[in-house]
Image (cartoon, rainbow, N blue to C red; front, side, top):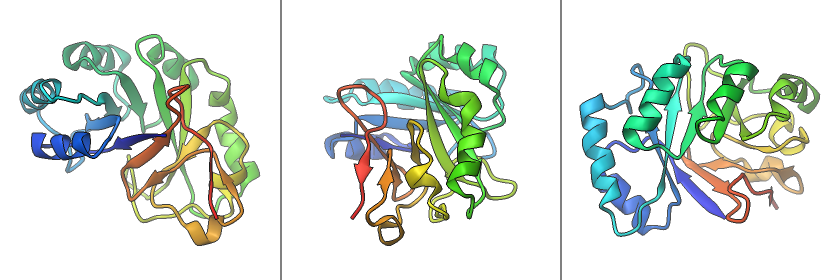
Length: 203
């Protein structure tokens, strides 16, 4: 099982996450986010992370950024993964996956049914080098919306590779099957063998 901590903004947070066993650290490249850092601040943070005794992999989160700018950030900060949270279409995701493995977030209504979630995911589900993340939609917001839980079983039985964002509702998912989860607003569970989200049974 691999763990990802999102929205790292300080070396102190990165060090705590690393020492606690995190395998991935998420960096925000979306300026409206309160967890966004300036390019120079990100330079300093990445340099400090690379000096850690145990260096987790770096994941860059982008929202509707042109591919050349994503590529520039990947090169500048030596990112290991690309996470896309905007309106990025399948062709752009496939092009981005040529740079690094891609995590594509789908912003879903809270009470969406599994069949409807599957229809939204279908255009992305067969792309090479791409994993889906189910995230709850909140008007005017991109990225994680911790504390807002998907209803209707969408995160548990949609039937495609991926994982659910936001907080886990163990009671609602009891006995269900979720391909993966973002817990506590920032911890995503992955398979060490494949580098992709690992199935997890709640109950």
